[in-house]
Length: 421
Image (cartoon, rainbow, N blue to C red; front, side, top):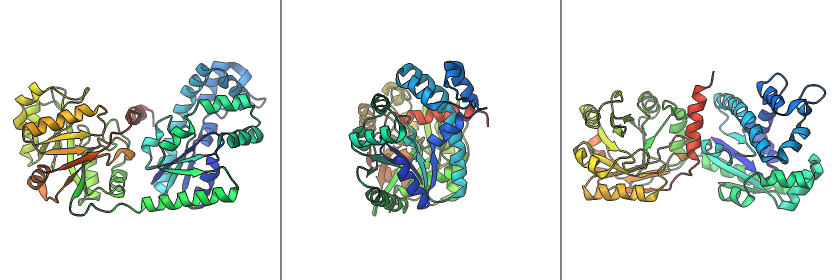
């Protein structure tokens, strides 16, 4: 379970991170990664020197952090240039640490990031914990302990999201305006909440909760391991999921082998018209590039079900005139996609399905673990393709749109896969 830990400047998130580590978490501190990324001999330090000269170097050749801080706190363009140098280097180190944490399997890994929400890294986390304290308390701590001026504190504080925004986007909030013993008690309560969340959700009783659209690292724009997708789906209380990688099926097979009771094997196939058509209950890979009708025939030849995703999305959908010409190729319509941010587009899909008497489904279209379950449909229990279609005819769709910044996760996945290993 990956827990994102963040907080306002001077709130004490590192103290909370150390407590979580003492209680068994695998802690990854991106401040430490940032220091590692700019050590002497590292490419990032050389790029920083090229931008600001030797004045940012200490006498031993290491980075003079106070000198650099004074430069970037007074110049927003300089701060953005610095982030453009340091952040990619930190993300590369972060990817290595996450792989190491996964291999250790301690149960909980804590990703401690000051700008967790600002950079979109919260989207790879299962839970977000935010530490906060009153402004004057935080200012006193930072200026007293780190030697910053009030001007420097204000500049750094204003460069982050406000405490109110961070709190609104947190799953768990730790208050740290009092004593160390009070902080430890608040952190312990948060740790216990993390433990309860990790115990896993229970099924939905008489109806199954089903997410029909998600991706794994076998898609070009996703880094989620199939095993982590399965574990997350169970944790958020899903009874069935369809793994539907872009033009690939091995991720679905891998997930199905580990959880045949949970996973429906699927594939999201790009057609010659530039549209997507998902095949569910597949037995083998379908190559992209065939016409919409040819792809539908290939799905059905395997005994599979054709599932039309995001039919009216601004970027990935079509129009009613074209869909009318291939309506006989559609078995089930996705009427809620959590990555479609314009609710009218989803509502148009629902109206179109109802108008043509087609069964309905929903999916998160998750490309990060935290999105899984954001779109789901409640179905009566089914067994096989035919039973699924009968259940979908009376499906109850529910969900909430993912945040716009989830697309940063997809973009990072594409970039990460292009980086040298």
